[in-house]
Length: 562
Ligand code: ISL
Image 1: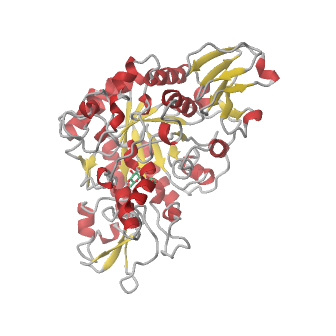
Image 2 (image 1 turned 180 degrees about the vertical axis):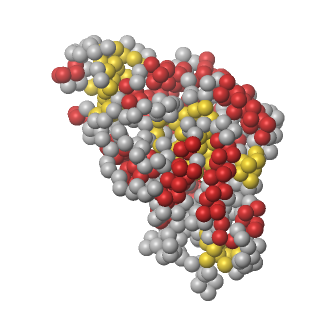
Image 3 (image 1 turned 135 degrees about the vertical axis):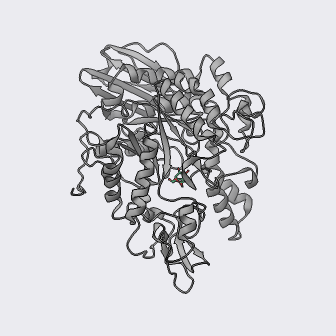
């Protein structure tokens, strides 16, 4: 079979092919922070089972479960030491089977977060590989001679100053894209690849509904590890030659044999690169997460966000599928980073949700965003757990920088912002656990929690329910063509766009600002019949023919000629 490498741009006026995972809303469960059933301070799968009705109540279709495989847990499960057993912290294989059955019994699907770019250094494969230069598994990882004990090149990893670690036993360096404890697998080795495919089929044969593929754009490494011009720009870790050959082989050997969904975590991809992963003609992945916002837009910038949305719509639409998200377990909470988590927290949480659920692509809800949970500022580095942040803090302070200055620089984007325990009620630890949690709760759990949100007439959870219910009722929200209204294309606060499918046209109006706005619709729109399907102010609509008077962070969805 020839490998297809050519790609075209998307087709903005096309109507996409239909698929269940395009119509779905995904809820990401960072289980260790979701609900602790046994009081050990860690969330667990039993706790998740107890809360499945809460998730189903939103109208969720798919649950994305962060890694539960056996692991020393240095990177919270992204350092796997046994792909076919469950980390005791999370539960047992029997409990996992029960979780899958309970998810399916509620008509939902379960996708597993799988890390195949690297393993833990405690994985038996690595222990064998590092035991001697002629061990049969030596080539399952990436080993190179240095240059007079210096690393083979100047690359830095995501979490450390160098991607190379010296191994005194066999006197070579091994390669790691993340922490030293996370050695990269050598995907050039066909035996390794076949073992990964067998493991994937092991889980798919248990009945899971797909995978979230961690760091999947990193699988291929360059022939020769030349020095980088700018070692700080770590994009060199991704999209190396051969990557798509591996993904097309993975699709042939695994995904093509099941009715499952695959979503790739593809950092550093452009729409052109992205289409190579998700072009439905190519047989690789179903959809992807790009990071042109979360990795590259430190704070809200409406014009930049609009530009990113245009690029990806034009780049993928009609040929491949994307996702919409503004936070996850790696990126701080969206209402803090990209909205207003103060005076307008509730309205802002709803506006961001309206935007993500009405823009093209599958929306991903990260646990807690459905009640407007916020980021956090812990007082010292010792309150933080995230290996990425702690490594960077040490690295910067070791350069002689002021520790408090480094702390304040790292706090806003620390991954721990979104990893604080789910806030269920205002009891101790937010109702997350009866024991001290593995990570400090956000002190605002007394004011922001599921119970209090549910008791509020302005419940964010109930707004998400209504938003998600609309998706089930109207196909235009999934398959409708996207187009911005000209007068507001360059507006820094107002985002005004339509979704159109056949005779159905929706107009979405968002005022991403702390001030009210008056919006004079163009003549052709002003007098059209319309139905206000959803409004985060729950107020009456404006008179047809007159201007739209929007409050701060007000979001509206109109069905035109409804
Ligand atoms: O967190 C990021 C930047 O601050 C992301 O770019 C992230 O580190 C990167 O995209 C890869 O993330 C994934 O792999 C890591 C793991 O630590 C992350 O939690 C996971 O989402 C290594 O497995």
